[in-house]
Image (cartoon, rainbow, N blue to C red; front, side):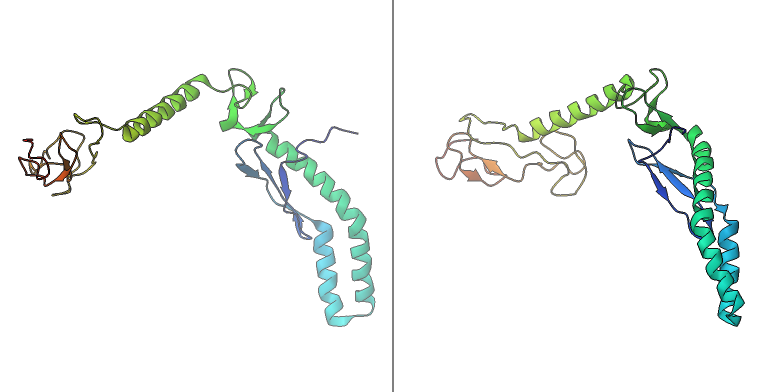
Length: 208
């Protein structure tokens, strides 16, 4: 008996009218749908069914006989159709010798002759690592508390001006309207909240 390929990563879309299969990549799930193969047995059975509904009698017996034949003949035709479908789909997939998975071109490392799970493409990995590192760096900076003299209070980081809505990338004042970006101000001595334009703390009197 020949080795059966694609035993776990296909969907059978076949009907009485014909055969069709959908094969999918074990890694990403993308698929390839084969061409529809019409079934002669299914066509005959459907025609006899229609005649049976109209005339009954001998046509009804013929329809039943056709379905009985289909149960054996259709299965054989189905097996042959699947074998043809495998050959049709095979050029679009690669079988990894290390893990046994069938993967499509996007998930295959041509240089290593393995799937990308077993042999990742280093350039893609480096790029992904750089992105993840940048995200972690941004998260750490966003979570970092910027302390004033008493080392207790933080400065709010904004991405747009609270006055005009312009995008900002840093600094204390908006490059569009010139107004201060911080909407909250705290005393550098006691930490009490102050109005943005205040020069002295209302709580301790310290000049800011």
